[in-house]
Image 1 (cartoon, rainbow, N blue to C red):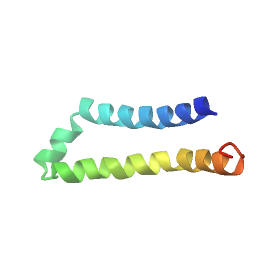
Image 2: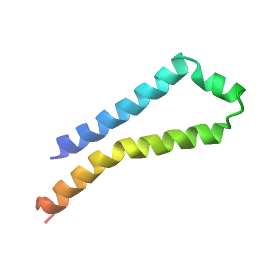
Image 3: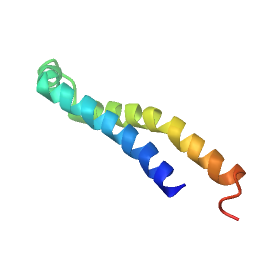
Length: 72
């Protein structure tokens, strides 16, 4: 079970890092800053995307742990 939990979070983390690196490679961040986007707004949007990406795996692991009798 600990391996499953670790792999679930590593996968979603790698997707987020991949998307951020892709954005920086394409220099989209610089273009957005030139267009007037605030840096705080940019990182808050990444926070929301990361939470929405991670939420399904966290929900599944939580259900498995609570209903599976692992933590008794």
